[in-house]
Length: 91
Image (cartoon, rainbow, N blue to C red; front, side, top):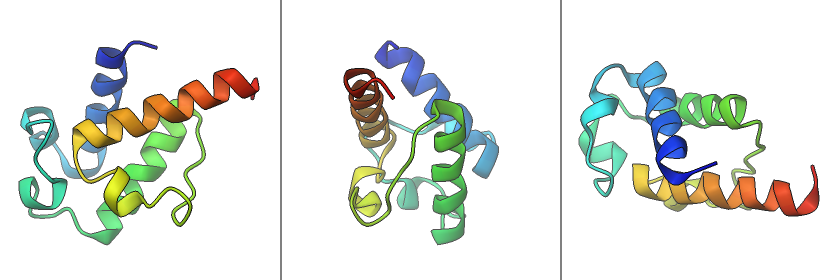
């Protein structure tokens, strides 16, 4: 899966949680700063949407989601890494 495709899907997942604002957010701005309604519940819903969309499993402790999912850019990198791991491991 190409990075632009991953980013598009990440933004769609975020849009499902917080609405249209997700499409216009800069890649490197922290989500909590860019979206007033992005609280811990929204973060959980975003991660669940990513898990469903990409068929991945996110471990909240192991993956340090507060850091790894802080921005769209970091979220895309994180998802790409998990997808690469899935491919290598054949799961």
